Length: 274
Ligand code: MF3
Ligand code: CO
Ligand code: CO
Image (cartoon, rainbow, N blue to C red; front, side, top):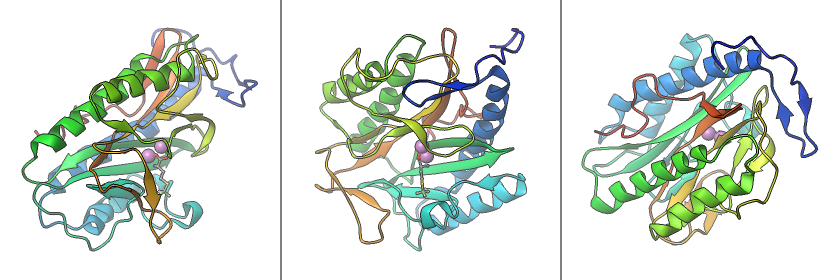
């Protein structure tokens, strides 16, 4: 996109209900994505054995406020925190609490901020203390699965191509893709069409066009894919208690691929625990 005159001719919605954004809108998404990614960079040194997830969330709450941004999750469907923190067998939507992080725990921290009305949504995995061999493989496969999905993004490809790229890779590594949660369109709203499935068949689903904004956020389990939501109505866990991991980027489709809005400014997206 850089170096081109701004193309502001694209404001419309496809037959699948997917909004097509203008080049100027990429600037807004870049700012929101970069703030979310910067906050995830800054929280990394705090993830050590003995810290509680509410301390991590408190740091994130403060950083969002100091930046003059707004948390997208506080007040969203009754959710009350600036992050979701999902530890070990928690798949997603873990609620920050007085739970103490232990040596060897793996955790996903998911932050969504609103900057000038634009939503930046990203999550990545952290490790407290030593990393076990199986957990290390899970994190690597999950990160690489996200990047395989992103590599499939270009105009003319389908959302089924994206899902298939992720599913084929994950299952080829004898792990499973969670079916119960998906990525989503975003922009000036948090969750918009389409549902971005992390599994599927090539050539199926809506066709990608330049100017679409959405997340890809695969959740991968070491065991079976089934999940259940706990009585708090948020926390999703693996039914078989196996370890689960997730990485998430917000992206925009460009003429020849995509721009990742939530790239880590400090190149800490993966691994954060080196
Ligand atoms: N950030 C999550 C996503 O990737 C949504 C969290 S909603 C919350 O879509 F309310 F649980 F925070
Ligand atoms: Co998301
Ligand atoms: Co998210």
